[in-house]
Length: 174
Image (cartoon, rainbow, N blue to C red; front, side):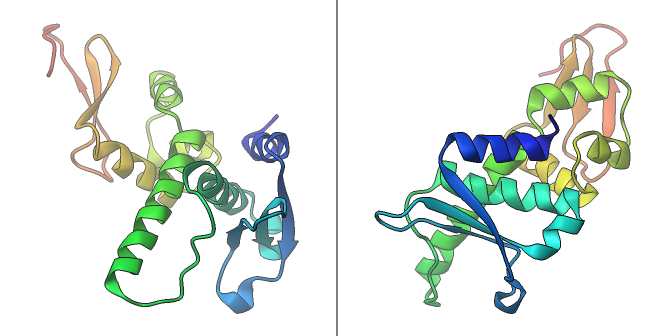
């Protein structure tokens, strides 16, 4: 089962209905709807059917809303506080999508399999290079480096460049 199929399975197990709709006139590719007494719904734009990577990324983001926020958070007001709140909600959904599609343990495994270019890593995780870089930047907010094994580290401070530091002397890096 590929990642897209796993996301659909996850949605089904959580009673989240997914429907395709023409959302381009709203300038959206996906929207998450939660209403009282109605099943939870995610609407995806028809164009996603032709782009598996974008389909995967948008569906993961919308499921991220389901798993990380409560209620309908579509707010058309333009005051600063509402914008900040909306950004927090979007960041939570993005964080869920990043971690679900590219978990830290799997990232370490991929790099240890000698998959080390941005393009190859993005392909390995079935996402776009842009999404993969955003995942690394999200990870870099928490850590400066990712321990690959006892003496090797993925340095996260010079993104989008990937740098693997190898401690030949066997000294532990803090």
